[in-house]
Length: 111
Image (cartoon, rainbow, N blue to C red; front, side, top):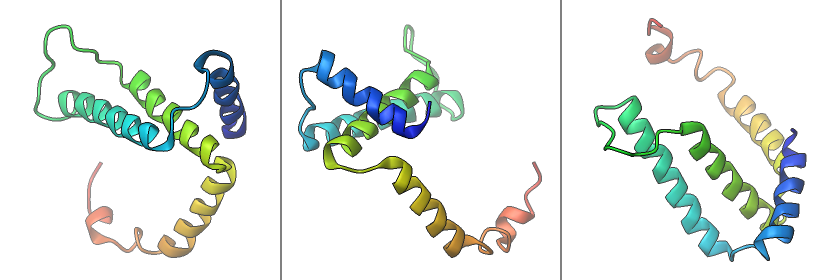
């Protein structure tokens, strides 16, 4: 599925099942909540915390929740995410074309 298709599918789902989009500030709060759920799983899976009994461990599902809400915000604010991500790639390539390759902290690290 392309980014454009994802934006269209989310919009269709919202109109069919969700009645309407939550307002932008509600979606911003939901996005923060979902990112927090990703952080919780990351801290327990890759950090030093442990999971509580019965706690959800599905990182993929939580990342999809973040993407869903991000798409909702893009849709309701008129952002074409395909265009936005291309502009972001262009910006990062121009700005960082040498920066990371010349960063001794990255180049000296063994994988």
